[in-house]
Length: 146
Image (cartoon, rainbow, N blue to C red):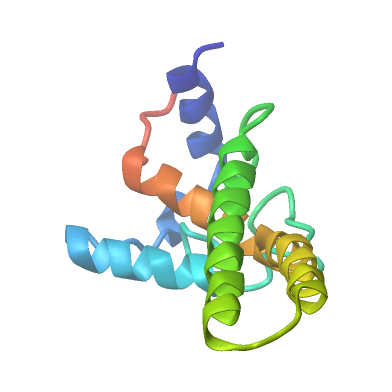
């Protein structure tokens, strides 16, 4: 089954009448980014799409949209999370190196902690952001029945 066919099938299964997406591009982007960083459903804005800090539900509890549509859907989210976390971590440790007189041992301990901690903390936000990016690129439309 191709991408467009599978996309049409999950859109038919979802409650598209509950989707609350602004039509203007700027308002839509701001709304979707707010939902991503609030860890909400990008389609309807429902909270509670995560069962725990790291565990995403299979579907939205309100509108029923499936979150992982195909095998490997969130691979891009993992990459975005890792790249963003490592750049932020590198910048933080570099700022510590320039602005403080910490010993090399303490800088290494902090760098390892940041390199491990930031990707773990950013993981659920990266998944929400990835769904938002997908929604911005592939705007779903109501599909005709049949």
